[in-house]
Length: 285
Image (cartoon, rainbow, N blue to C red; front, side, top):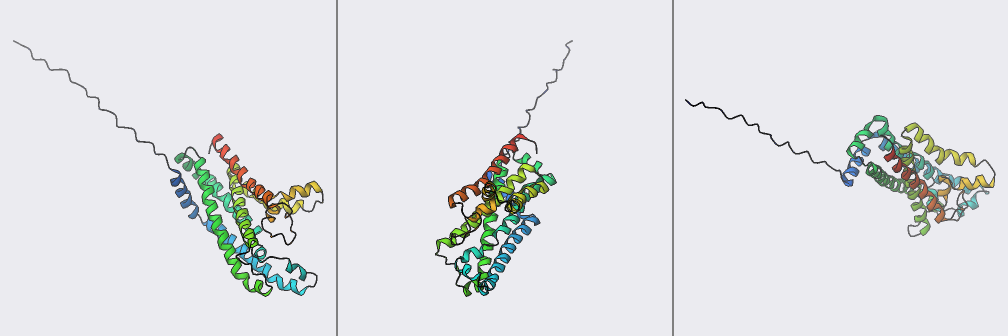
C-alpha cells in the first residue's frame, strides 16, 4: 500500500514595489513657488505700496518747494542748476528704506515661521531658493520703481512746468537719473535679502540694513575728517547720489565717478548674496 505524500508548500517571494522616483524641482518651479509665496503675503503689498507712496509724496513736496525757492533771492539761482528728473527721483532715498524692509522679510519671514525647513526639504541644494528669491525680488523692485517714477512724473508736472523743469524723455540726463534710481533700489533690496539670509532674524536684519543705509551716513556726516568723509562717500546713500544727479548741481557723494558708483552699489548687492549662498551650505535651517 503506497503512501501519498504532499509536496512541501512553496513560498513565493513577491518582488518589492519599485521605489518612487525622486523628484528634482526645476528652477522654473522654484521661481514659481517663490513668486506665489511672495505675492500671498500682505507685508509684500504693504512694502510695495509704501515705496510707491513715499517716493511720490516726497517728489511732490520737492516740486511744491520750487515756488518758495523762486521767491527767495538767495535760493532762486539754484533752480537753474536743477534737473527735473532729480526732483522726480528726490524721494528715492526713502523708497530705498521701504524696499529694504521687503528684501529682509522675504527670507526672515520664513525663518520666523519655520516654513524655511519645508522649503529646503523640497530643494535640498538651497542655492536655487536664494536665487529664486533674488530674481522675484528684482522683478518686483523694478516694477515698483517704474510705477513710482511714473506717478512722480505725473504729480510733479504742474510745478515743474512753471519753472521749465519738465524732463525731456530724449535727454540722456533724464534716463541717467531714472536708471540710477532703479539700479540703486535693486541694490538695496538685494543687500537686505543677503543680510536677512545671514542673520535669519527680522529685527536684527532690519537693524543692520537700516543702519548701513540710513543711520551711518547721517551720523558720520557730522565728523569732519577726511578719512571719515571718504568712508561716508562709499556708503549706499552717498554713493548712489552720483547715479541720481546729472552733474549740474553738487551733491554729497556726487564726486564719485559714475563707474565707481556702479561698482560700489553692485558690491552692496553681490557681496551679501554671495556670503548668504556660502552659509546656506554650512549650517542647518
